[in-house]
Length: 473
Image (cartoon, rainbow, N blue to C red; front, side, top):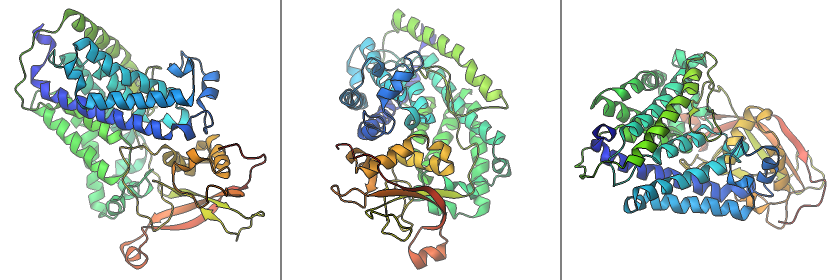
């Protein structure tokens, strides 16, 4: 069926597939390097405990069948290997059916991880990667031209990502309607980047222009994705430029990058597509059946977008096939940070020898300039930002973190930039204090060399010690 494929998007599909494989690779690498302390058998939120109380039908995962740290590591590193192979273009050298299986493997493996990831995997970009990755399974390889219906579904997903995010802003914090949110956002965002200080100090009128441009990109431009070319390409290009601007201004894991990847298939890149035979009948049937299912499931996010009670980042099915997205419906005016400290003193005193732990990404030492980590995702650092907003976000994992610091747990310490205690001398007590952080002014930066200024707010966790002997590490 000639109407089934769009040969003009051959190069667009190729670039999309390689870029998506790169995002998959980062996601699996993040899982492989961080899971033991977060989710492992001795982690802060152990997977075995989770699968005991949550049935398979609610969170499908191969770890319901069996869990061990070795199996989790095997899944994560297998995902890395398959993603690297797809990045190298292996799917172009195998039959169409085999290529679909190759793309199905990282989706299934990452679904298994996300569905047992609990708090650590509760971010919208996890579902976005899964929804995008599922569509990639049916996009074909060099044996067929890109299917029109899958290209449409990718645009439909991009539309929901951008338009949903725009609506949540307009319905949320009044500063979005007043165009003043960026007076605060660069300072209070979860994890600032190396340029965030400079973005914060841009003139106020320029901040308003940024917000207005964001509203146009998220509330108007998405509709142009369904316009004829070259309008659709121009709309996608504008979205890509907006996302790259956000990449420069902060660390949002792979949220911005997966949105860029989603915009790529809407670009009609000039390329001489090779001549290939018509798509096999079985392939057309599978693609059309899956498309019909996904369009049917899309009614839930559509209803959510139209609702005055619109919610952000929710999955409507346990396979994360169709989800709703959005970010920063409200913007904090004040930045609070939790500073975790330990001491070797047998009796903790306020003026004792308290030494601070330094995290990789979240602000700590006022003189330490933020680093660029995205698209790599520092999950503990992100959750520390949420915990500073409210103790309710800390749940049970914060107490488990303190316990592991008291034990000098190697896997936990690997998540940090620096521990102030040698491996053979764990702290006697650990405490946490809440500070208010603000960016220094240009004058303060020149005089002190510090990009942050902080003031003590209150005690977050009183000095705590182990009540039982430390576990073997």
